[in-house]
Image 1 (cartoon, rainbow over the protein chains, first blue to last red):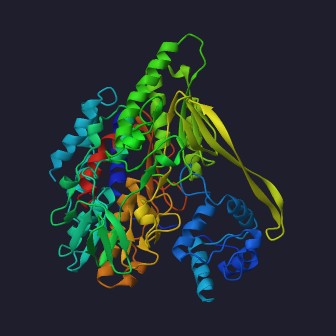
Image 2: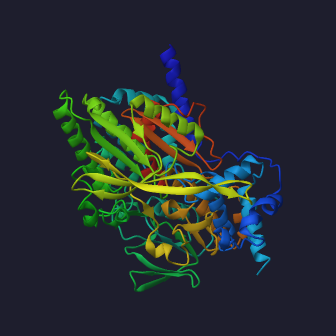
Amino acid sequence: MIKKISTITLASIAFLALSACSGEKPAEAKTYKYSTVEVYEQTCVKCHGKHGEGNPAKKTPALNDRTAGEMAQDLYDVKNSGTNQSSGTDHEIMEHNMQKLVDKGYDYDINSMAEFLSYLVKSTK
Amino acid sequence: MKKNEILEEILAEVDKHPEIMSRRDAMKYLTVSPMAAAILAGATAGATEVQASSVKGKVVIVGGGLAGMSTAARLKNSAGDLEITVIEPDPISCSYQPGQTLVGAGIWEGSDIIYNRDDKLPAGVNLIKGSVTAFDPDNNKVTVDGKQEIAYDQLIIATGLMLNYAAIEGLDGVITSATKDNAATKAKVGKDGVYSIYFQDGAVDTWAGIQELVEKAKKQKGQGKPKLQAVFTHPNTPIKCGGAPKKIMYLTNARLEEAGVRDEVELTFYPNGGKMFGVPEYHEAIVEQYKVRGFKWNYAHNLIKLDTESKVATFNHHWKEKGAWDEDLEEYGVELKSKPVEVKYDFIHVTPPMKAPDVVAQSKVGSSKGWVPVKKETLQHVKYSNVFCLGDVVAVPMGKTGGSARKQYKVVVNNVISALEGNQKAIDDTNVKYAGYTVCPLITSIGTVMLAEFNWTKKPTPMVPLDPTQERWIWWLLKVYALKPMTVMGMLSGRA
């Protein structure tokens, strides 16, 4: 009897797995301590500059050479220590720095930050 | 698509390995369960969720692999008046890549995964048997084989990626997974203890290599000799099917256990990164699975050189040390350190570094990292609004799997049609967004699979209320018997 029930359960589960192909669950909403602008103006700006121009003396890269879409990808990589299972990240220094900043409450939404940066860059051109 | 064709294919697979699951058992689940109904519905139903559009225009799809061909089929289903052209040089571009792991472990034959481009070309879609040699997005055209210019209204890039064996000193070749033009790579890979399932011929050779390892282990059993060293690598680039480097390790383990010689071999994983998986729940589950099986692992090792004569692999081992005080950060910074580490091997599975094809990377549609930059939710190019991209060549996090492509191609089709209708707002506001879903059916032994589903929230996103970190035979049924027919018949027809 138990076996029979589990068969039916598993079959139904498989059905769900295969039929629930469309429809993504929406990402859960997250609230942040500081606004995107506050995060940039209180932290990022120190090394990456007022307009994302970077600081050669500190070897911090410019952020004004990429589109918002590309920026979002880079931020995702930095915040998640890479974007593959075991490939690692090519932003090792910033991975460390970002973690410290997040620990201090300077967390932010990736798309919002990417959009803000592209606005900063445009405002200088 | 005839329903019994799919069922027959599933049962034919089951029949090959009665020791894992009998036909009777499989029939029981397939015929009495709604699972079969779902598979068949997916493969045979009409494209009901897509609004039929009467929009006209010229769409060029560069690449006729799983991503490109499925997109072509769905576009044709959704907007029958479109003039659609697929450009693909490889006659077996539609081969079933997820099966290479199973070929490598001797569960499938090499011929089980080969599917012909020409058989999978949707009716009413044009095919150009050639390679794109230049992209000119400013003038809306591409060049084929250096001579033929093709103009488009909308361009879809689905070229796939290149396996860059040449980036490892001692190996050679920059190849695709299906190509037969792979002599440079095969000169060193597929023999003498060096194997790689990432290309078709390499997968076939890997099975010979595993059997050879088993024989070696049998020979030395009970003689108290040092253990044979089996090494599994994972490079520092994004890779297709991020789980495959681990799957082939699990399957090698299974074959050694089956032969009763597991004790004679040490299995060690050398990934460039510092974890098993981006999703903490899956990371922890894999670490547990490794412990149970007695696997070893050394993080932060990137394979840079292979000396196939002396059987020594050289890794770049890297780590961080506490750096100077950083006034801006108000914390100590980090300093990056690295050194070469030499490892003796009897058997090594190489996961090659991967990159976008040069023709894409170095063109205006590429990027400094090579991959095609898109807005990751809409898959629209960041600079060219009439260029879309999907599959292995697109720059989205964690997206290089067939499971990702299955989500992406529907997004691309919707947005290309909106673009042709001149409705950018529909693209930006659509609720058909790519959320980063990907799936890794992590084969953990012969007969069990952990179905790791996740998206950009870095949380497990299982479609069913089952603990997703557990290894289950039901997912083996899905991975080994059902996914290929679902993909080859359902997805390539643009429906599932």
